[in-house]
Image 1: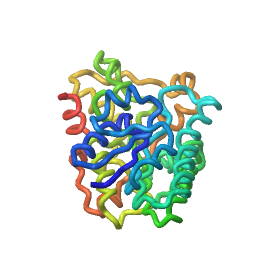
Image 2: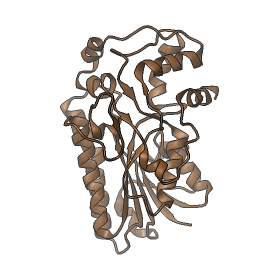
Image 3: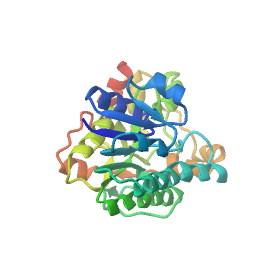
Image 4: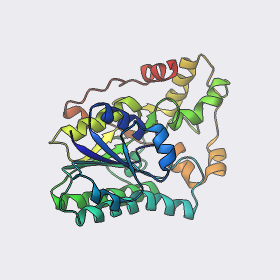
Length: 301
């Protein structure tokens, strides 16, 4: 089986991915800043490293899955936070490239994280992988991250750029922040509620990563979203319905801006209506293309 290197392997997406890859018999190495925590989360037999230099003692790497990145939505964006976003994404991907530049064996494929913030805000426009972009911090961050990943092409490595939407799953992600209010019947739309939310069930995102690993024709941008985006108002109403709670208490845009500043405009008040054209064209099947069944499955657990 293949030797795979994963960054972000103990995160919300990575831990599920690593569990599946280990069960399939692959040899996994995970870059981690907290070996004790990772050892408790990840399957036995996963090798943990603190620096890329430790890879030299291991067998050549066939596949790199680069998911690491400081969370964007948990705090107000300050200049120091923005620097952390760049260091944990662009800087780490650069260090990854520099390691393999000096290695005798290059990876066959790199699946590298990005986000739908790459596109910026475009109202109701449907955005496939060729969609227009607008200048904002999220776009600049994602563009720089993708450019670092694309440097792997000089090795002959196939590079897939996973532009991920809002990931929904149990025990973390966006739902962890929303559920306490919605369970009390205090949830509702943010701002106008007309902004689009391009979401994906965590199980589908993990399956899409594995699909991209195997489909040799997939290279370049790949939207990691379900086929049916919803407005924020629809999302709130659907979550309320699944929980059997009212979801009609709006949060004014001005309040979100007061609390979160620039982050509110880019992640909460504005949005993107993203369509996963390349995933569908490559034959990928979404287990959860619609929001209500996705939320029902997650919350049933």
